[in-house]
Length: 114
Length: 108
Image (cartoon, rainbow over all chains, first blue to last red; front, side, top):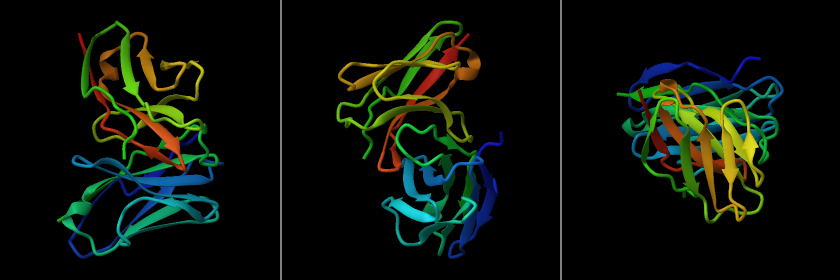
């Protein structure tokens, strides 16, 4: 059974540009959540989607957005990139996102903003 | 808003059991305790999770105290490949509350 797949794995962008990251959850999983990981702030929750609806959102500026498609695949977008957006962006999937579900992470997308 | 506290680092001899503690004194009744580990530059790997009963799988055992305010992850026979950062985290309202984790160093 394939795991959580994130693309691209590595990318470099320039300040002011925008970026879109993609996440394909494990087959049958309908909940997808996103986290940002930086050396200074650790793992921080961005948002969670279930059946194309955002159910929870972390404390990030509006430049960070996401969506989920009917096949449960999800994308997140960061507009007007800043140097501080350089991070590992992680996607996690589970059946319904309920406490008690087994939740799996992907390998992440490494974003470097220059 | 991390809700768990873990020692920043621990050492363990190869072949011995590694016991990683975690405090979660403000845990609420419906929050599960999850453990993940992360090897540099990779995504967190799921290890185990539980609510109040002890749990065991092929990777590890999870011991949760009766009052649920702390837990211990046990790797029964640590190998060099178990060297990683281990995160104890709580899940509620569709999100994890991650702390800083414990860097486990397994030494030959």
